[in-house]
Length: 219
Image 1: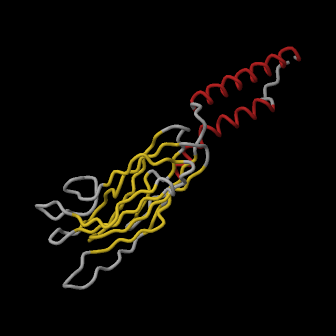
Image 2: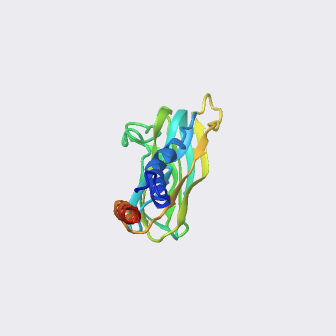
Image 3: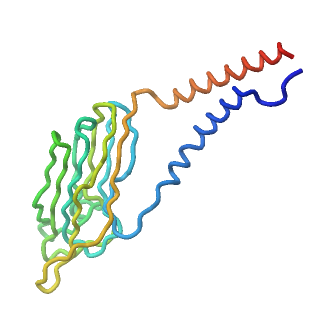
């Protein structure tokens, strides 16, 4: 007589498969949107393959009256090699960027815009120039492109973030209150995940079929 209830092996396989299916939604639901002015790394988490190139944005969101910024961004240089830093300062030249340029010269005073591949650090400090207006809204400070050089973990850290507003009537600028959202990278081996799932499903199906066969002979 056949056993109408799932065997222990079948229950284990079913639990693992269901867990693989529901894990991505649970992770996505755990990411909550921040409110107010933020400086963030977008995307905040990534799992690139070894040898793969990927990019992150350093983004300001929901800011009002922005006239200057000073940002230091850091990563693990033993895991990630920086390939390019694409500054997005000046919305007249970069519609997805931040800060207004002083026309007609399209000028922004950039005190610092440097990258150090050896230490894993990017530093940018810049202000708009009178009579350029202040910037309000959301936009990208820079787009940073990396190559993954080894397995491991790397934080994508915003170690210093200062935002300043437009100076009024000869008074100095005031700092704009904001929150920061850092990012992280976990490198995985160069082995397609879809292939891993396919192999697992084949093994699970074989195990279930073998279990049914044993039950048939035992009945």
